[in-house]
Each structure stands twice: as structure tokens, then as C-alpha cells.
Length: 103
Image: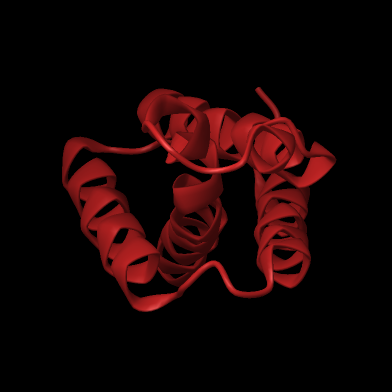
């Protein structure tokens, strides 16, 4: 049970902290250099991987918990220091991959 809670938390952190940067190119306005920045590219990869692992690895109730926590984290954290936020997101995804059972 603790393993499931920890994996849900790690996926929520990975997707929630990278969601704002992932959505940045899809909204009008903003600087083109900011939309094409390497941080945005990494955030997109982390967000899409976290969503894919959530859909493929989790139960139905765990998917809803991950989605709610993800949206809560995305609303709470601003994008003032994007490199730090995306680094934490990538570390959370890497920790999840380390805990993920193979097979």
C-alpha cells in the first residue's frame, strides 16, 4: 500500500510541476524564445512521460488521485524559477522509474 501511495505522489509531482511549462506553447502571447527554451522541451517530455505512466501503470482510483494532485500542484506553484521546478519534476519521474516494477 505504501508503495502505491509513493508512486502516486511521485507521478503527481512529476506531472504537476511540469504542466505549466508544457502548456506554455499552446497559449497565445509570450516570448517565442521562452516557448522554444530547452526547459520547455524537457518539461514537455517529463509531463508526457508522467501522464503515460499514470495511464498505463495505475488503477482507476489512483489515476484520479494523481490527476487531482497534479492539478493542485500546477495551480500552487508558479513558473518564477522554471529550471528548478523542472529539475524537481525530472527527479520525481526518475525516482518513480526506479520504484516501478518491471514486467
